[in-house]
Image (cartoon, rainbow, N blue to C red; front, side, top):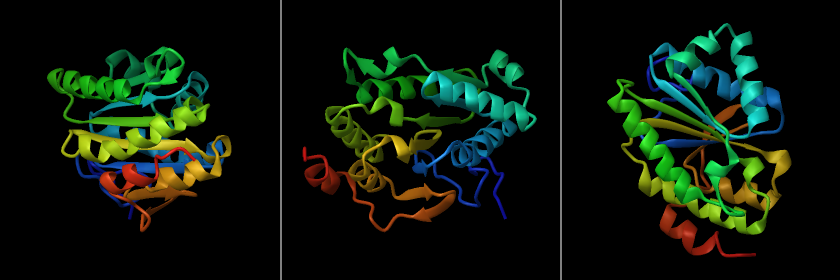
Length: 208
């Protein structure tokens, strides 16, 4: 039975602890939306704030999918329940991807949302478009691993989506190792290849 509780994901019976985050890989838009749409729906159903972080075309596609699912998207946007953070400048410092700045932006968003009355924030990121160089990828792997130190207990539910068709195979293998739980092909599973941050950062983020 799919869980629609305040910490449910909407597409599976798994419930997240505050600050836990899931890696969700997909190969096409249908797989992406099968995770993203119910994740957003459950959050809005429980009067949580939902923020999407990704490129503009993905944001527009998600808005259309939410409307087709029957959500009053414009009303949620007007109320501030639903946010789309799509300016690439927010994700970069000069030519380099800036994951630490993104982490601080996310923390500020959570603090502001709690102060404004939302009990919990759902952060949905779609990130493959950002990772254009090996340097971007190395910085991003370190960031995803460090999240396991930075966000436990944070009043947020975090899902990080990646389009496998836009990424090198070795990155996909490594990004899986930064998450204790992953969604692959729409199926959620515990990750036997997960490495805690200390072990992962010592080995996996070395340049190839």
